[in-house]
Image 1 (cartoon, rainbow, N blue to C red):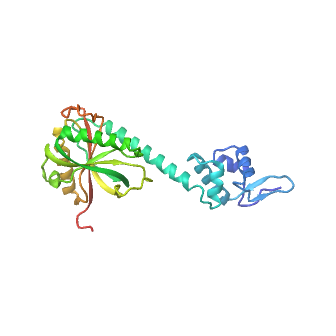
Image 2: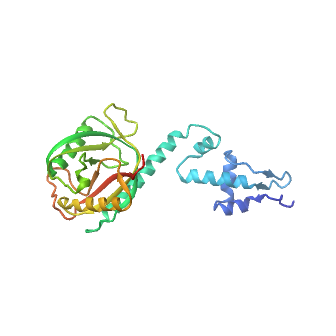
Image 3: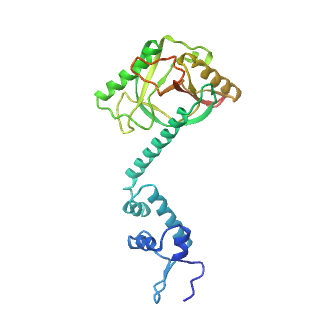
Length: 273
């Protein structure tokens, strides 16, 4: 029999999607896909463009880690895949953060390049610290971390702990190193429900990854302030700092030229609500 017009053979569909003919037959046996037309005499299967689109969706979901049962449930409009989607979203967030961490660790001394990034929503437990100096501030992060571990709080792996500085003097060329207040923020699992939890909403931020002594971190703030002025941006939140590749046990050398700090300032366009 001549192949029906506008339909494709099983071999053509398999070749386009880079799968075997046996795989297509297997998906058919699992009721994931059904040929548009099957010749009763030859039993040849023919597929439509809609079949092709459906198959590509199936393969995409399979590559994302869904089981065939979950894929069928998704295609049929079921809701049992919501849990899997949440798991995959979490894995994606962790991969994105791992990539960001690798980029930060590759920061070169003297590099003050400013980047614009999208901060994700973060659910955090926070603690205000009246710090005597920089060493005390960093040591307090570790203490708060230990406190949450003892309480059995599930700490998120999708985003690192950070410090928020409620002092806009940082945006005006000031950089206190003694007697200042810092808010230690440790992201926790999004399912964690507590009246103490603080929700940081999604936001655009400007950031500099700074390699060098913490006492020279003012250079990063200068670069950020200049970038904001040149691009019509103003702060929409408090400055945040993420400390990479340093210890938090109180013995950290703040003047170590290999220290890495990510400085972030949430921003919005000047004049916007």
